[in-house]
Length: 290
Image 1: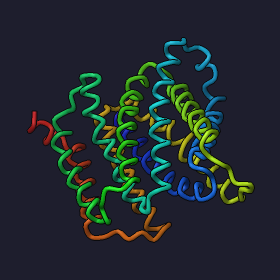
Image 2 (image 1 turned 120 degrees about the vertical axis):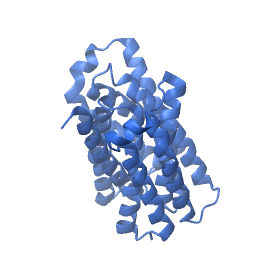
Image 3 (image 1 turned 135 degrees about the horizontal axis):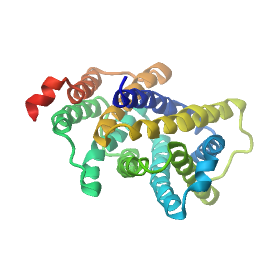
């Protein structure tokens, strides 16, 4: 298995963990305040990673630390907007597919920020992904609501973070960059919670369990794998693979919350998967469009 194929496989696993995080988070914020939950989740996740990267953290210079923290600020802003939207939304599947727009924004932003022109196969596969998202949006009671606006803004912030993460992951050790980003996100969440939220008097063991799974599985492991995967693949390639996240989220929502997957949603998922197959097409397809 080549490094590129290994990176692709890692990113697919990342999408599965990320989709599970939607369920963990939805359950946890039934009791915990949203920003406070994010603060605890990401702060604890960074502390878990710290023993594996503290030497690398001590060795980086201030400029590098500032750059990594900047990436963390974009991640924190995107995550806080995302968790707020989840608390306002009635459909995880709808929110997940709105968030997947960030992966469609990524190559374009990379072109604008870093002059990295997307490959031709990306532009060939992109229309199929957009058609899929249109079908999926028609599968629910689509209307411009507050939660959808917050999801869109979060998606834009995440697209910027994704590009910065790919850029800085080339010169900062994976664990160090991940740990810094998670820590900054945690600090932002705790800061916002301190001034805007009230914590419940009692928190049940089940809620702490959802928090623990969010920390260990959907945050520490997920972001470590995502950063590692991005290190050995192109930004456009990673962006296309990450579109799988809402597909898994819809499936998990069907299983856990009995959300119904309609015909148009099935068609939408099929278009998105087809876009992945087109982009990861054979060498023959690549040679035809060159």
